[in-house]
Length: 429
Image (cartoon, rainbow, N blue to C red; front, side, top):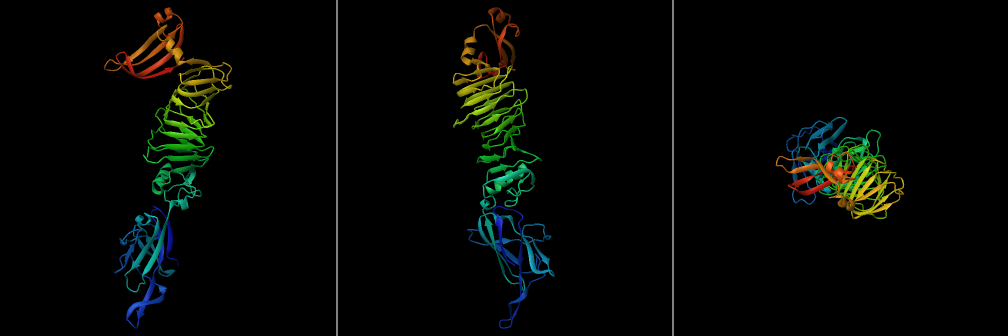
């Protein structure tokens, strides 16, 4: 029987089997030194004189193992149990302390001391994560299995089926990349509460697999390549995110910010509540963000990069400020696009869309303008209102919010007296 083993780095609950030879009397010295040819039977964790030690890689002294009682097949740290004195004489199962797998390298384990027992050395090779995850990825699938044992779970042949197990494996192995496999059981990886892992976490998804932001606000930098991005959390902000070759399908009423959107992104959005994108950008490396417009009210704030808008229809509004080229594809048949001075509009729709520069909005201010529906906080500061642009001064004087209205904006922000200190406006007609 070989007394050499290989275990994954930072793996837990490892069980090994060792063979302990028996020894008999040496007539010349009257000591127990001659192998009997058979295994030593009858040893237990508390046998007089039996001790176990191991030498960690780079350590200058042995570490003692506190031997303990154990049921065969059920791991206990330091557990020691005879497998079968009749069927496998001399074979014993040992529960390795988890600390044995704490560093990559060769770990000698020594068993000595019992009467009529030959000394045993077991060489345990602790192998690096790259050997079990050769492509540098932890695998996830809804049809995988539970568990977070390095080298066993999260492999290509045995993917994890629980998000928490993936994050546990990332912490144990130092591999912060995950392959999302499509499964008919579940094709969405639901992000848990921010694990606050310092490195970036990269997800590579198959075409029908999905990463769900789950309404979480992340400090950890998330990268997604391929598949679909969801956000079932609705109105809660998602966090720092980088996407490439991704279909984005987020819930209505959602806000997303500080996101890098690579080329060939399709944004298929459903629902009716507004979606706001803050400080998002496209690297514009030979491609554009493909924005598949499927919702009536969208806003891009502090956008930077190239954007192509598809399938925008009458009754829809899109507001965009920042810097970059915005192409209105020929598939667009209507709707109003309000854009800032740093946005260059390339209209391929044949004039189907109404284009309104914020320069035009500024020209409207002071001309036939109405201000209604103001609300205030407990200190008397203005917190929200509606702004109307009317077709005539008479209608502006009446200011009923319905007759002769050209445009209407919701205004929300922080006001002090008559000064708005943090402005956000949303054009709704």
